[in-house]
Length: 420
Length: 79
Image (cartoon, rainbow over all chains, first blue to last red; front, side, top):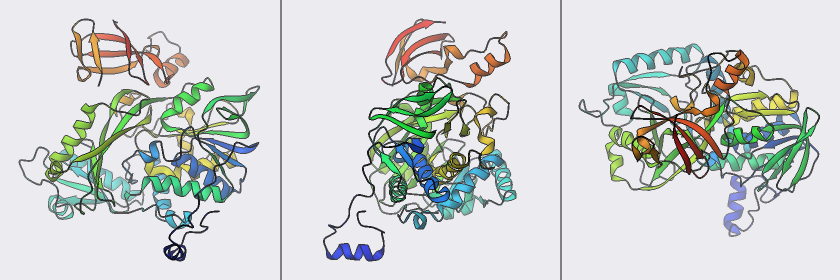
């Protein structure tokens, strides 16, 4: 397999031989089968699921089918932020389970995902904001998750880029930082999981779109695809923004609506900020990539869309907010903006569980916050697919919670995806 | 950006409008619990054309027939 295990030695060997020894990172697998598990969707979550199925549960006959190419969907479109400082205890457990995996992920995958725990800072813009942040911080600490309340001066010292003026458009009164949070190189996460899963025998089948399900009575026994039928014992949907479409192929309506979320990046510059800055009061967030570009984003577009492009007005909102917080950003040229299709669930929390059809499972509804959950989501989904039982951390996120009144509503805004 | 032809005001910028929900997800007062849960909590979420309820700043509710891939609006009617 290509260059084998990546190491300083293989890099050195490459330096001597003109770097001609680097092979494909994963095989271009053809549809085979039957498989024990077929994962629909080759994003970070789907690839992580396949990886942990093979690694943790010894399920070796696993396929991942992807309609496009690896890294072409939301895994390569987010703003790369990783954190676990949520407010609801179920989400805290879920995201901190994932954050712990991030801290060892590069070693585990033998692939540098460039995870950088540089700190994730929420800004507070008023006394009321500071009360809310303090309350959240206390809830996190009670759960054993790190949180540190910062006053105005501490924020000014940490991020000199911010406009700390009393007459600023959105004055900054302080913040709440999670120092274990940060960023990761999102493409590397997809590639690293793909390579690691492939090395354990997982078939990664690209350019293979699911067009329907194979059925045996009430049971799902595999998928119909643009590259033929593929049989599987368990079929696992993991398609983010296309969750509604794929579930629709099985005749199921989900508590999910697809909306567009945009992001932007500036020209690369020398290091100007070494923290992730977020404002939930405004809803913008920005950080600097290791290449030097300032990366940011804001609210989704607030209407249903499967188009991977967004409306300029929402882009303008997040840029205007970011510039107001860090005026120096106004001197940078924006080089790109783009959009992804997010699976907005009806309580703002993900869905990991069984579908109403035997043999069919769902992992979706991650809204605009799925990237940070990639390793945890994959590992918990793998647990469900291998054992048939939900892991205790994933159990509260079952599909039945909506009908049973057990929603996990972080923002308390009810079943209105456009209100989050 | 969408240019939405309001039947009352004429073509207006998308910023003046707000999406509410799809036409098939209105909860009726006399719905049985199952039907209410379905209407409230599930969506066909079509990767294609659907019927949607939007509101305009002018205070009127509208029914849009809209393609969610191309964003083309094929009909706007007062509701």
